[in-house]
View (cartoon, rainbow, N blue to C red):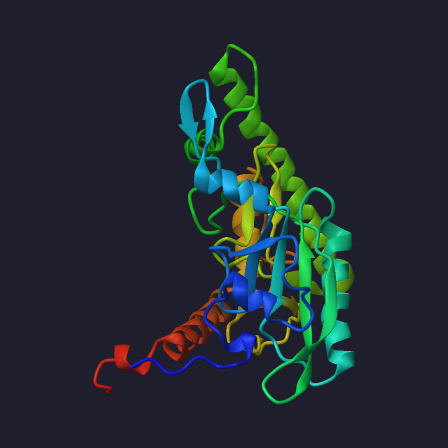
Length: 305
């Protein structure tokens, strides 16, 4: 039997349109429709902010040249509600400060621009600080951080997005697009390196769906939930959920630097040293196993009820 849902929205597994309208800081009925986005997960609720007229066309269809079409409603913005609890206003402001630093290094080409705000959330029995944001919507394909980043895979991503090039020589157009991806990827990697070098911060690059590849050939960071400090301390740092996000993100950055840009970065040079030495990698793997075990329901563990 599933446990009853918490009255606190931060503990809910997911939210619906009605849940958003019941929030004390959202005007009801309002002029928009809120729909859960597939990337909502462990650290935040992510809701599409939709025009009701677009949703009506999606459901009812439109007649185009004698054919009924059902165009999917494109979000105007993304509403992100952070699950994290803050002990005080200073801690919440520090989180926003980190987001603004990441934005300053990656904007405008390499981040879905966020606009965070703090609200006085009326939860079950008390008021608390809640962090939310209206984020730029980015259309694109998920760039799997550990996956194949060769020409064939990139071309397949472009095929799914649709070619936006009028030239008759399709193969040449694809080759040019792949080269643009590699160039823009190099820019993205250098921007993140600057973030590490100047501010000792790195965003979560390791989560599935955190990076999107756009039709313009740009890598966009769309998840700014988990920004960690970069420290060469021999103790592997863990985030508030127990995940070694700093080290995993550093490994992703090296993978992109090597496989996507076509360069030959050195593991024993900044910013990758000491994060990619074999002994530390083994410690990171152990921390990752502990995290996965903690996230797995007790009923899925062998020998446990």
